[in-house]
Image 1 (spheres, helix red, strand yellow):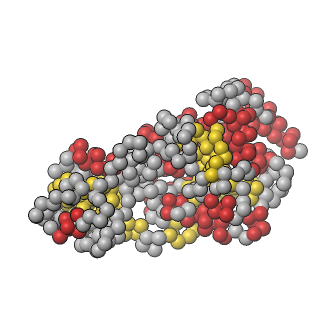
Image 2 (tube, helix red, strand yellow):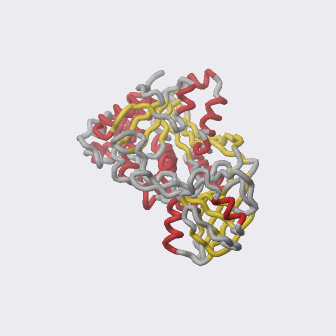
Image 3 (cartoon, one colour):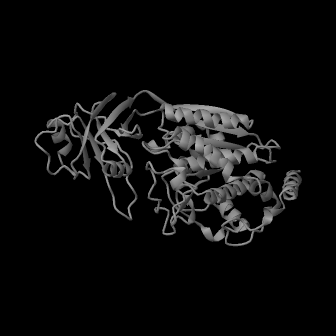
Length: 439
């Protein structure tokens, strides 16, 4: 009965879209699609997913676990899934305090960064900006100055010395050179508490400050205590009452200072677009979409979810397709990696590799190879088939784009609609095929 329903859906789609069997954009070979592939690959649209990404990355911007910014993203994602008629659950969990900051320039532009918990919090300071490079030679008097220190050597007392000499605030930056990626905002560790704001800013902030040379700058720090983050879970049952579940997942938070377009707004909107396309297609297994909170603080959302699973519920999960950084426009990131924790094949990697062969993307797909560092890890530890899927360099999955975790991880600078489309087709075809299999 399922085979007939899938065939009917495929036939209708093929009739409505006779180009569905044409060679896929960017594919290295002509497709040989199964009839069940047509309802997915002919309907998924990167442009639809990008509309969601504009809200999350351009509109909300940084989405810091447990803070109001992440909660805004949570509400948007949940609303989208409810409108698609999924059963939606918000799963709360506690997360550590956050220490954030902003920098405001005379032209009114404001940048997000991080703050040190050892500096003054919930306060602001305005003063002339003084670039003192690595702090090796400090003036005798820094009264009223906002001091910029860059690439301060390990063991240096430059930050404490600048405060002792009267600095009103201290900005700490780190600048790397190619081929290393650009550095992100961070929360500086100090050997003693100080009474002025201390910020950890991103490399692009350093570059922009040095280019603009603003006469004055305003900095502000905020301590966010007693935080609650949320997983957003959405499910539709199997058409024929099967008990098993196929999961499509991503994390929707980002690091301080970053609007997280590719990491991992891209995976989040992939899940939302596949939820739209798969919502009415016949399956044996249930489809569950999970958007994790607070991944960037140590996979907190996915670990909480997996830890709450009773053994029978864990055993019902046939596969977890975790999507993390699935749309970078970085030129060398031409390899689509299948990343399992132990490098072994499992139900998810096999289905994506098979989908790639059917769609003509086989030469672009690499792996599986061993790689953790994303939300597939807690599932693997529970012996649930899971893998992470991501665009990275041909030399290995460690070759991330240089804008990773930076303020420049934007749609404009770091998202390829073409790669997002390939990701949608691969995960959509693979997850649907697994969901159609009898348990």
